[in-house]
Image (cartoon, rainbow, N blue to C red; front, side):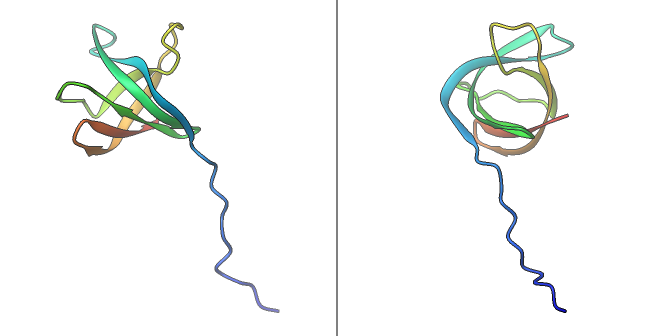
Length: 88
């Protein structure tokens, strides 16, 4: 009996949000930074800032700006003003 080692794993599709405005907080919520949520998946998101700022390695992101709950995030990649984050 042989098993095919190249079984393709189906990835969950990302949901496009088309630059929805939101914000992140640093310093335990003391500093609020406006940003845009480009897309989100169960494990993370892609965000963009308009201004060139130094986004920290860990921060909290408001996935739904109208709600007080924020998601803890860790930056996994940076490309200019666009960041990939994973939810922690």
